[in-house]
Image 1: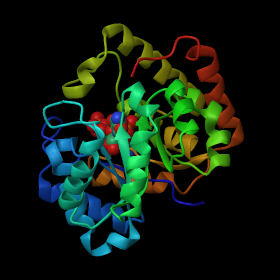
Image 2: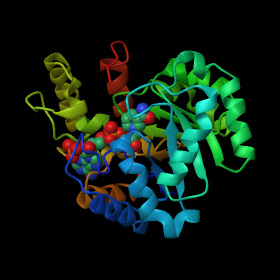
Image 3: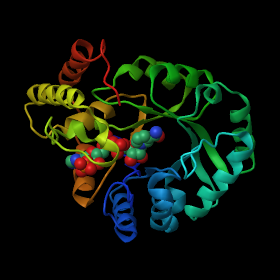
Image 4: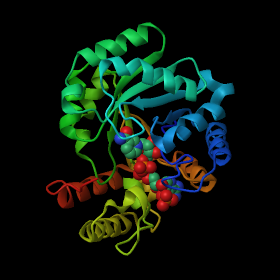
Length: 296
Ligand SMILES: NC(=O)c1ccc[n+]([C@@H]2O[C@H](COP(=O)([O-])OP(=O)(O)OC[C@H]3O[C@@H](n4cnc5c(N)ncnc54)[C@H](OP(=O)(O)O)[C@@H]3O)[C@@H](O)[C@H]2O)c1
């Protein structure tokens, strides 16, 4: 089985989120590389540049063996930077933080609809590819509607929100595969819910503070359903193996906080999900979620 485990870089030395130091972040990325991980997802605004810096420092001696996927479009102050003239400077800044000479892929980071539909932006990225600054380009998006538009553009990489609770993108997986688009699935554990360790009483801080009590209750009930189907309290391996079972997907990029989580993810790649289990998780989505999708 090919290794579809990629590394989600949002958590790396992110002061908004955790106490991870730069040294710990660098060491975690190095351990991921030593464990066979070759795909690394990051963005300039993850940890205010710390995520790119940690990945750059960790992988500088193994650079040619790794695929570094970063993004552009969001300034440190939260402003949108999707102007065509702003593309190259952002790429050059990422190249500097990553201690490299090129990016394997750069994605427009949740672009506004008019940018997603624009030909001019992708023509500009094509020019930067010809100049050798980037090898591939694409978009990071959230919805099926955006996915459809992205597939009508000539893109190399599409990063999309997809997991047991967000299955709608699979309607376009065959089309993406036919076009040879590299599909990366972000938020594979529904921000941690699909581990089974949170419930309606969990108090979240930071970006996960976004759930209303009603959302926590609904997610809790759905998590219980997954536990019933899998006969397990730890549903993380099932959530990951569900994603790995789709041929069209190149990598899933769980956000990994520590060595223990990394080691567990490596073991999850060794086993395949049965077709029967996959069908039951698809039925759960079809019967309990698709008519009333969860908010992110
Ligand atoms: N717009 C975008 O392009 C975008 C948006 C979101 C994410 N992303 C990318 O996708 C990556 C993943 O998204 P995410 O981190 O938001 O969500 P996620 O991968 O669905 O969930 C990550 C969380 O799951 C828990 N976890 C992970 N592995 C575990 C394990 N083995 N055992 C127990 N718990 C485990 C951790 O929770 P605890 O913290 O509670 O330990 C971790 O913070 C990000 O790092 C980023 O690279 C991109």
